Length: 494
Image 1 (cartoon, one colour):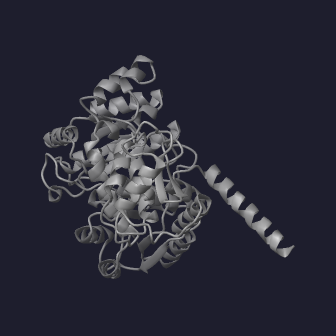
Image 2 (image 1 turned 60 degrees about the vertical axis):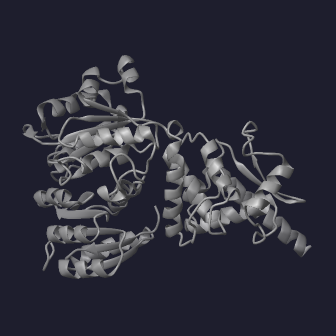
Image 3 (image 1 turned 135 degrees about the vertical axis):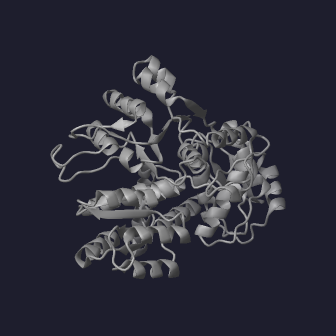
């Protein structure tokens, strides 16, 4: 997780300081406030990436504080906190716009997991609109970048569901933006003022997933020290996203089916069911009908979810969107990295359009993020782009006439990869390379790895992801560099 600047509002000094310690140990910047008025003043004066607030604050109560900061910045993620006996406040906080809530007291490790959930919900695949069937970017808070006819029709159908509470099943490959479409449907529905709650069905074992979905009573199982509402309770009056629904254990599917059919849930250890009003959207990257045929998913639940089916096409099926997505990500990561980059060269765009993008939008975003880091000018050039090990890679080669661009593992793409002479001529006619230092590919590789580690504060996992390589490959490269450095020192000493 990248370093964030977090505002903590809590009237209990000891708990406030404990949070400060936990967050700073995670590497985040923290600002403290002891009451609602002080917290709101700080929020208005500074730009925070997140707010963590107790629901009971002096001078300005926690729920009012959440409402006020949502007026200033509707996109800021909020984690609400409440004591074990203040369940109503916690649920109300979620309805006001909090992404998560925590029951006090909680172990230090819980806050890290909550941060990850909140930032995932708010940051992953954050796309803005670029026209389309439904109007301009100003029509929605966070619409979708798309101009392909198939996506225009899909978004138009999603808007047509605005007055319905029917369950929705979103199917498509990983990285196509299923959760983003789910949020789009919620924002354009009659439930837009209600909460949007998401849960990853693959991220928890069956026993914990049941409790997370339906809640539990105090003493329902070992470790259940207090009553806890489930995601269905938190989403009451709004939308519940069941991400990766295909990974849910088949024994739990029966309880979910009953909740959908009867509109009521029964908490773990509870004395009886109670009514809920929730619109369910489920996502999967599987072909769910095939799983039904194989007995891996209940057929009755499938048909209950499949009232409004959507298939989100892979990026290779809508090539018209590659250009607008790439331009959007250039603008996004140029701003993040404080670079004056505003476009891509025609050669760079040709390379992007030639790739089949097995990782879909997520892979394209990572590729552009790397290119922005590599770029030394005011636009992305072809030599700034390279793909991960599983796809085709760009290699920079220094030769007598300058630089040439080759596409490895794609010799048939002659429109991009020419002979060495032609590539050098085309490249030099497209842009100047006078400002690039002369270095070998090995030197450039080492330089890029060092830059990625600097950008990620030394986190090897994040650096490897940014570079599009495995952590093992990164470790091997670093070991190789250390070995080379040791040999150079030994030689110099001798």
